[in-house]
Image: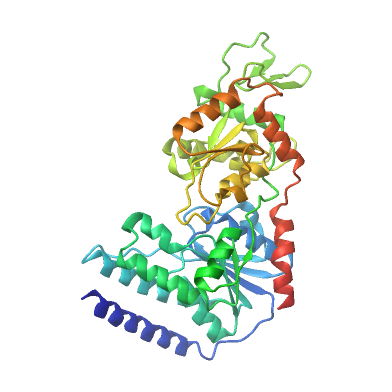
Length: 428
């Protein structure tokens, strides 16, 4: 019953696509090799890797059309770059009428038309660099546009869309099976492919017959350890509204400014960590899922300004991450083939982590070297007891992990991108 309906709606969608392409048949005009369309059918503000792609392209003189939803504000570096033009698309809301599968099909057809219009409206791109997931319907639409406009399609595989959908619908649901078939067929039509792990590279080759290049997520330059002076400013700001950041004991002298973590003697400028300070632990899931933390971030918006020494704070998230003592990652991959980007950012700040196990996590977290891997709450509890038993001693294992990260000289995004992506673009 559902199959004929799907086929009929798909035929209608293809017919409408044909009409739109016919309308633009005379408007395909190259304007030089510089423009690259970086596209994601998702929130740009929560797509840091695609923003990094755009910034790297702009750094090498390319004009960039960065296309996606604008629910969350992109990074200031992205917004202020004169070579990057943001092409916002609005998320469609389908009427909640009829069977869910019908609602989903109608939404997909509407997205096809919307994305097709947006991609044909921009100047002629030499490449369309597309994030997957979400790939349904963006891969097929981008491929059609590339075919018509003689552009090349690059897919950046972050995960598989069908595995994410299976978390909600189950592995045997028709929508999940359609999505799996779709990614397998249309993914092969790309000219080039990147992916986030070697495990995914092998899986793409074995099960999809797609050759991909591994481009690991790497921290941007603005993720780094936060200087103690900036930590103190942050903690004093937070102490005004949050008891956890207030000093545990009163200052011995009125000229000593004190938080739970730091103290500043304003008479001589001496600044240090509080001797018996608590540990600051952050979770990689808190940025979007924890309501209290969202309130905290909102309260800190006015803090993103030029401070006294003229240094601009790139992001309050960077400052908090760079001030913490330990990160805890609760990310579980739906496919077992992608890696948590928040851990990448933590490592950029030389912040050790405790991360929950999944199959390819070892490509990022080296157990007992830059952090610890746990499988359940009991194991995490034991790890936390061990790491904080002598805190804040500089001789404990937590500080050993931090020193290992400091000495590892890990590649940053710009260096990794120049080594991996730039040669491919230059050769084409």
